[in-house]
Length: 209
Image 1 (cartoon, rainbow, N blue to C red):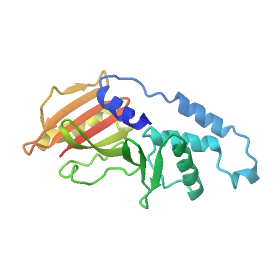
Image 2: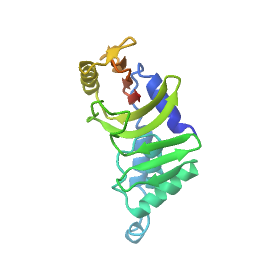
Image 3: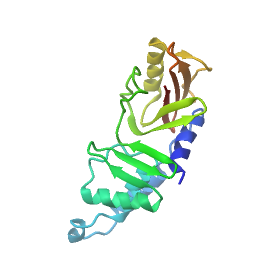
Image 4: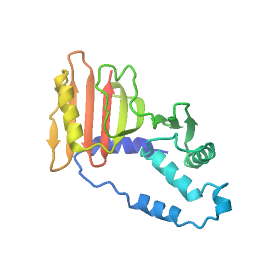
């Protein structure tokens, strides 16, 4: 399955496209879930399958912020649902999870992650960090965050903060408020590289060693 990998690549490559995020399916699923006819005796013992499918879909698409709010029963059903799509899911004690398939693994619902990549990088304390992963490309090893519900001004201010601590452009910076897009590729004097892309589809942030 390539949904998550494609999601992250698409967000990173299409940051100049200011397209409204399509929530029609989410609304439809929510409406269907709320309209299900479940008796009081059933609701005390049964988790509606429509709700579980909706949660699993959000998880796979990097839109789930928190796993703590779900019961043990719901977590098992979520796990079963994502396994049907070719994933495995491990729940962590801190409320986060590890979602994986044959292509790799992704940390979900953990927020900002402190590690060797993020050392010296200002914490992204706005929006919701829903997914992160460690990987390698032609430029080297990197750690990447997918951040939802960030706005243009927050990302613009964050880019300015990176500049203030020594990250200088190595490619043309794009700050287009009308197009709701920001692209920032920069390095500091220690050779640490960041690649940041923002549009209405989301905010991706890659940090190289």
